[in-house]
Image 1 (tube, rainbow, N blue to C red):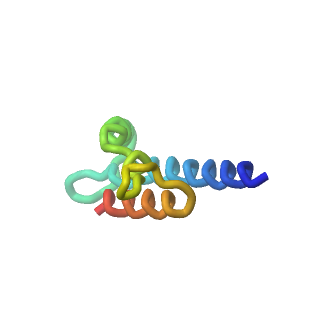
Image 2: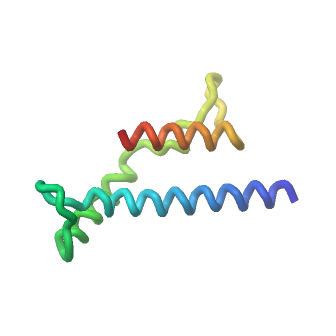
Amino acid sequence: MRNLIVVAIASLFFATTAIAADSGCEAKAVDKNGKALAGAAKAASIKKCEKEAPAAPSCESKAIDKNGKPLAGAAKAASVKKCEADAKK
């Protein structure tokens, strides 16, 4: 039962992260004057953004303790959240 709850929470976290990544690329689809792009220009901008996003190191892979062991549970979630917030700056 406990494993089921952990899996459910983890899947919600990953789904939320994926949605946030999509909206981040959409928010970055602006022209040099700050106006939102439309049509093919918007699609190309989003495609380029999504292509570049996986090239960055994953915050999940950076969630390790001082001994090099992977974090788990709330510590991992907090570490990933902080990493993603730092990446947006």
